[in-house]
Image (tube, rainbow, N blue to C red; front, side, top):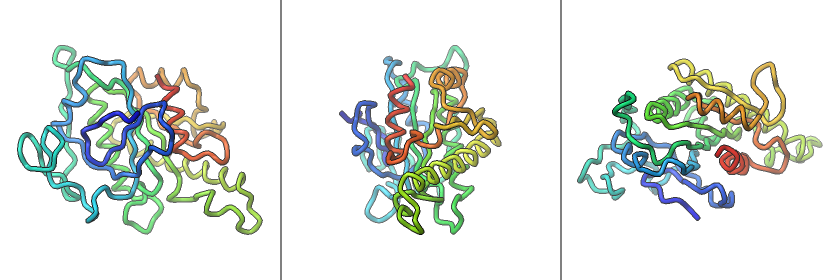
Length: 252
């Protein structure tokens, strides 16, 4: 069952949902008014957020404004959301003023195409920096953040399978390597603005990242580090959307 989420252009699902329910939506800034969404008494729930390159509105732009009830008019506490808006900086909270959190831990699925942006390069640094700032804003609230990243901006196995004798399994493994490239780039961007980040891969690449170990990943999250899961599930024929649902279920 889908979890209602009052954030335009995000797609939350529960850990038990099928991967087909992951809608392809765009990434828009969080603003201070969204803090109320995370400020509920239930601190045990988890949510998976989906982020990709396609746009949520027909004209290719984000809603101009949204009030606290999630509708599109300019009333209430809504603020302008468009491509030119600056990314807000969330205030930090001390031990006495931090509000109780409804969502204690979230997992964000970022597609490879989202990282490419509108540039000709495979990765747009402006996009990775925008995502890093949004993640920083959420972590300042005390929320633990994990990320699953795709690799379609570099290589998509299903597209290249059959070319020059390349079988589907080998093509999918190349796509997994592409997700590792994106993860390392995103890690470097986040650490450049002071976010401690760890990359964990589904198969061993010990020179550049940690192997995925569930208990270690949860420990990183508990220490306030962002964890980026790369290489999908480590198996061919499974998409990174499947990996996102799997890691969400595992990271209780």
